[in-house]
Length: 587
Image (cartoon, rainbow, N blue to C red; front, side, top):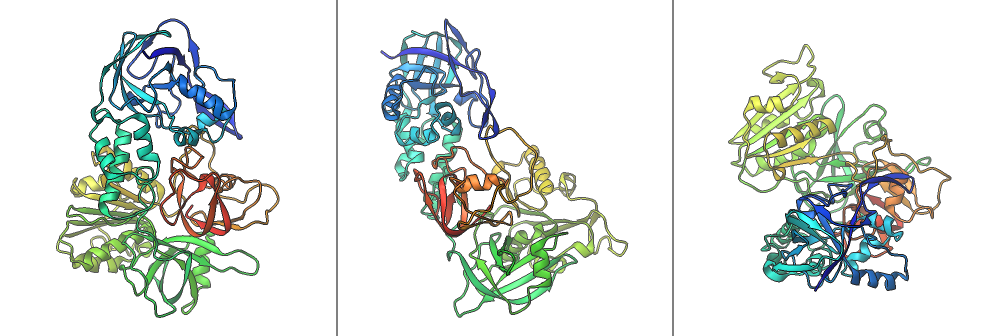
């Protein structure tokens, strides 16, 4: 019979790691005597990162003596003590290859249910002093598992573990773990996993995303259960030369470039809302300038249109306005991105401010071109009329729609701006405006504009009861970082890394507008980005969780270590990749 060997607890604390402060509770210490088990943890225990650990379905972590013995041999170590892997309960028995999701166990006077495999992150590597540990736990099929507390009670080392219930579908912890993280993801097994009532919500959503990916017949590579589908594969790799056929001033600060092929080969029509990367230059004294720009025109295989705002002291906007001329040839990436208009019959609310109108204008073009019967709302905010691009273009498109609605707000109108003609109301476009306009609550809300504008509307819509899946946002610059457990620090704009310049391949971060030479001081593209204070997203840092998956616009990489499941085509896992020559990444 299985037996509880040790009860281990620990409260969150701050540790120093690679110059950063990490908040973690991965250090657990055995305790003597009985301990009360509560709904969310054990007496004296806590979780440091409640986004990745803890909660009702991740209350208690279990790890097995057999796995201790395996890792002692695998790693050639004999210095382990109970709690070494951050677990609350060290047990003799209950192997991952036999315990099933939904199984129920009584330990002491408490009743538990198995809910999911452990999701490992970089912090177990810190605790084990083995950076690859998070990936090794998955690759070797020894993750451990979480329990939900069905009945509170007391547990103590030495308690027998009695199975009192059998999980539906009889899928083991190891099977569920491999189904998500390993290549393959058979549909029949995913459907089987989704029939398990006890499976935690996070794992259920991951399997639903994998199932939707398979059913849609879309992307055939990548893991939608770990990383959002990044749109269809780009129609070409790297950059293609396109000629500037028109240069249009849309407002005081916005200029559009219309780009056409230089040869007889047509373009691939982008999905409405996608973006391209422009490579401008280089000059004799500076490397090429790169920026991501949403396509703003009607999706077409004849030409692309990008619209660029000239920011104060903005290098690229100034270059486009003052240097780029009709007839010039620019290097342009293929369209990419998953901020796209989704086919649906429900209402759609297009919310934008400033130059954030560009991807939404492409969507409006697509809706008008198909004479969409949808209820369509075009809601836009600008400071004043001379800073309002695409005004007449949007009006014309809306007039062609059977159910088009428009509302324009100027926050600081000029005296010559006409209320009721140029704009509808003074003030900012905010949640108050949405309530006053009585927009439909069953709509898709598509938002693009300044960061504060998008954050405020996203939070306001969520508080209004709009489902998360109905709210879609797009950022022009680098996205928000996600560095679990790392203490917040003052934000710094992207910059060259400290120290002498390296001489390796050029790594260009397209959204951040920074190009940096690769050097031996860095083990991965992630480390280089961190040295430049470029916002990044990551969790495992070893190539299996896909949190760091990023668009690879141009170039090739190698992996050390190799990822457990490769990323989607034209993407890269920056946490474990190094450049093979010059590369451009969508960061």
